[in-house]
Image (cartoon, rainbow, N blue to C red; front, side, top):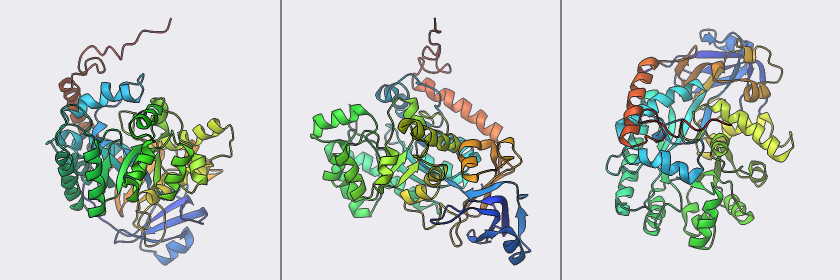
Length: 468
């Protein structure tokens, strides 16, 4: 989708800069420069006097904040939400993700990504960190995620969640070739970066693990992986390696790279020390963790050790949406009740994890994640004329616990207006939904998922026995 950058003054009842040490600005504004950067942040009266020619967007009743960072998802799952809600992780993988992963192709991933990019932009997400996973080797399906994000004009990081520890897997060189092809595709897009993906440590044979570590050293690649997601992972790792997957990653050199690791729920004290000493960032996915019954990431404990915590939706097949407002509210509530302490994680803490801490976790905080002069203009305006934000007593709590995606009025990515008055610019959403509906139905039929989806058969899993 094309767009044009112009100088604009984004006005709100409150501006939440999210820069370290910053405070909310009442009746504030953000001045967008014509080059796609943030020109200035401050009181509206001062900025409007300084730039009288700039178009004013916002009536002064809403909230201006940085675009949110979705620090972990799987864009290969965009066409298969809403199945397997009664399954634990390993069962869910075999019932939902793997059948689709065997047959999905690049065009289907691109289409699903376009669909969910609309959902993400509408929920205030401007940056997404994706791990595309599939076993349809030779299809280069992961490149479809880049295609879709480029169409939407989103900022992103894309990786291939490689795993070869399964029957019939090709040699490790095939997986490394897809990493290389994906890196090349990402390099062609100014807003999209690459990371080397490790689906799971247990999912890699030793030869592929070693080749992955070597390639990261050779190319300077950062890493996106899952660590300590479920208790079974800890048990299997101890039987296989004599240690946890986090320790295995440390001993094998994987943690010598810049790493963001999703989940980190079942961490030992030694694991936590290793994460901290290696400066591993953690992507916390509370909604998906709850849906699959994985457990609760010890976020307050990790933060006390200085570990950067970001927030993610996780994939559309395990969340089951890509709405960041659901994530931030759930994150705040989950840790209050888990610790029986309402002070354990404040709304300000949660919003930081969704913005500046997410950017820091991906190593892109010099350019995005907060509203500061000179940074790229990734900006969200929330409409204060919605019922959720009509009375803003505390802007932090209002965003985290009151706002929903319905409140998102306008979104800029790199200075380009991608959402205007709640609608994604240049997107024919009904037509996109119709195309995705047809593709999703065809995908589950090819995958033989008659027990999960009514598109593929009788949907036995869908029609569970009613309660007696």
